[in-house]
Length: 477
Image (tube, rainbow, N blue to C red; front, side, top):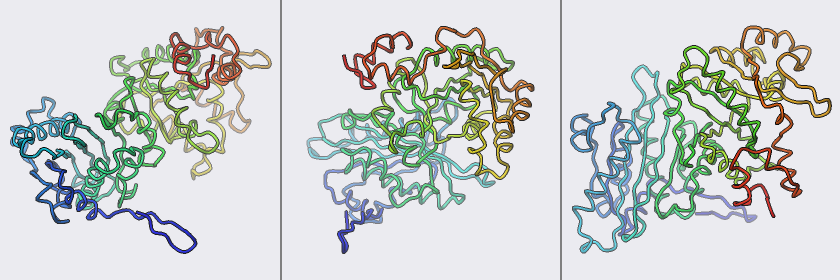
């Protein structure tokens, strides 16, 4: 809805939670169940209070008792109930019950839905603020398969009642968006924060599936979570589906490789292979419990002031084809990335990077917002025995190979650099392929744009074929 004022100024008015719930209730075709565990019946409460809910609410329940919940949805072998798996069981079970108990002959035009959440709110000590899974399984046509939206939230408020109210508003937004904004997934995503603020909650994972969302790329939805400031970091796997960072990184050893990957080159893969070997050889690093992350910062995706979504998807497609997990973050400074990763693990953390990127870490301009300046940043960066695995760079003009032994930092930074260098924080990557040191993504892009030959040899096996087949990065025959 938009309100026009004098001078043709237009103000978009966000419908209240009550108005959204009422519109759903007054739609004679929408009918479904609410199953909410962990924070009360906060979402369905809006539908009861708005009026007209008898034609919409088939059932509302809260199976708080563990044993009673197990009797309905089954036992969780790992003993964890605030999980995506539990949420999916709830959604599936409730839809099956609706289908079994209602005859399609008597309700030919009804579209069924099942809304569920399983959450844990802030504890009494206020040490853990709480988190949860929220989802909706719904139809848009009685003859079509079900669609599904599943998301994960982290609460930021420090009061149980406030968290409950926030969850209720979020639930209403999700149901309303599913039925009235399903053809505009980007707007649907934004609408999840209607009548809410980013200081109240964080959405750090979302996946869309089903016939209604067949054209939705979940990797793009993941990027938009960061772009819309709903979270600071997201992850997706090789299959293109979004992953929950906290779940993937929990108690893991983490090796992160930051880059533009536009496109991913042989240098990137050589750097990863050799850094991983050094990382795995460290004491207390279990290969089976190690996560490799290709990380791209939001600023790296901005072109001419805007994020180029097509360009992002092209990079993502190539990394996924190589079987890699990708993380998009809003952490331009490395110390912020390390702080974030440290939230989930006490394991080892390593960063693989080229000499040029490493030198930039010693640029004081990045730390002017810190009261302790660069010293504070480096304290946060290296406090967990973090190692930087340094891949050499070949000087384009002189041909000189730059390593930790001869790289140049600002004169004021020399002693600081020496401190970390000679305390084993910086490890040179050796046994590198010297023949590819002159390979840069920028060079590859220019060659593709100019239709030059030879760029294929700079990329990992299989990547040139994908670029040509899908005409990525402006490729033309």
